[in-house]
Each structure stands twice: as C-alpha cells, then as structure tokens.
View 1 (cartoon, helix red, strand yellow):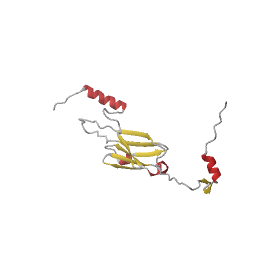
View 2 (cartoon, rainbow, N blue to C red; view 1 turned 135 degrees about the horizontal axis):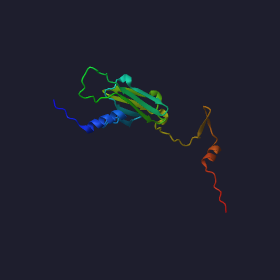
View 3 (tube, helix red, strand yellow; view 1 turned 90 degrees about the horizontal axis):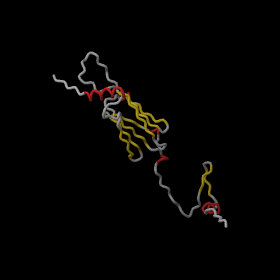
View 4 (cartoon, rainbow, N blue to C red; view 1 turned 60 degrees about the vertical axis):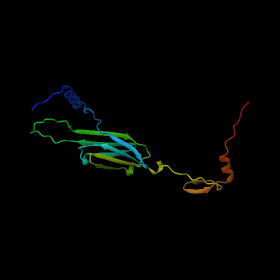
Length: 164
C-alpha cells in the first residue's frame, strides 16, 4: 500500500487542531431569512445528536449551541481521523419585535431549523382613516370624546413670532 505524505496538509491539520478550526469550515454555516411574519434560521449540524443541541432566546440574543463527540476507539489503527469532536456556538442579535415565547426549533437530516415569529406589535398594521367624526382619546382604559375646540387647537400649529 502506497501512502502519500503532504506536509502542508499535515501542517493545516495540526494548526486546526491547536486553534480549534478546520480548513475550509466556518463551524456552523447558517441561512437566515424572513418568510411572512417570521424569521427562519437554518444551521448545518451534521453528525450532531439532537439532545446535544441547545437553542435559547435571552432578551435580544438568540443562542445556538451544539456538540459532536465521537466515541474514542483505542484498539484500532487510524488511517484517517479528520472528524474531530466539535463544540459549536453561534449568537445572533434579534430585534425586540420577536415573540420569544413562541420560538420553535426542529432538527432533521443534520439541519437545525429555528422559527422566530414576529410579535404582534412588530407586524405591519393598517390604520383606518375616518372623517367627520370627533377624535377620540383613551384615558386609563376609557374612551372619551374631545370637544371640537380642543381638536381644532391641537390641529393648528403654534404661531411663529418674528423679531425685527
């Protein structure tokens, strides 16, 4: 059996082991997009057990943690050992318009999907414009009509005084 030794590949492997990175990888590649009234995050986590994945939202920070731990085989002769144990962490700042109580996550075929629904207050709302009706204001949960003179006073801009 002929074996080929590439010193640059070996150097890259050793440097990756020391620095905790592998050449050509970003750790946890993700896609993030807005779909209707929710954000969707998809993260590639091949070989990770679902019970080792932790997804949390704390304030405005979404955190995704995952680990891949391989069984140590001592009674074998390794030909290639390029799949190291991984401990991955990604954090994303999300707006306060996310409904943190209804975030959901699923893991299928090595892909983690996190759905972040928008809070009702962050969604676009249509405001109906009326005419001919007095304006209303809310005071401590009750609605009362403003007198017409008060409405007109609020609508008119304050006069600008010029000095000579």
